[in-house]
Length: 351
Image (cartoon, rainbow, N blue to C red; front, side, top):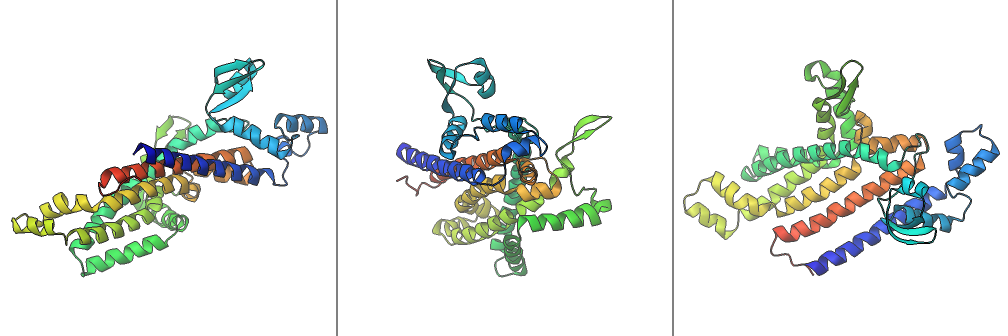
């Protein structure tokens, strides 16, 4: 168990290092001048040179890459002075001369447009993305399992055929296209009946009442984001339950006179949910990472929306930070999924 966890952790760290490397070199070979993006087109040459020096743009790309790694790694070497401590908020471990080995949160730089720290911007946006992804996954899980059970129990009927057809359509429908359709029909055409808005976030600001919670803004983006995992969970639940219902212990339960409801929900369904749990965990990571366009379509204030806005403004540090955060979340959730699957299914052995 511990050996498996250690190997998976090493593999995950290598993947994360690969993502960091690709992201850095991708955004450091672009022709755009970051100093010019920060200061604008009318800035003087002296200010531009000072800004380039501040951003380490006057150094070779390999040196900038090593400095970038030093910034984003939790343990790094930094100047042993008040200015560096204020910038990185580190805890000093080993001082040596004018430098020190310190532990800190990864430092992702400052936004070109707002000049705020990227860490601060992402921290504010991440809760919105988490709430949206968890709500979408909850909708997909509850309705997916119910539809899968119904299709399995009514195998060969129009309910089964309809559930399969709907799940195939759901898998084939991209989230951004589903979001456009849902926003147009339920947020615009049927707004007077649904009372739902095309755009909006979980927290809204009113000039008179201040900040207030608007839960109804969560409904449409959560449905749009949850359609594809709902379809997958429906198919997995149906096929796994059909296989489980053919087992000997199920026939024994029926022979003892247990009702269909007790046999299905007490005996068959818990044993049929292992592949479903794996799918739920994997899709949760994908929803956290893939809500970019859904957030943008519905104006939902989360990591996805600020990333798309940052791309539009060439705000490279914010885009890089968003990509790295998304990759980290995806890797961690997949690592937890591997461990959870082995814990749920005793037939699985960690090798």
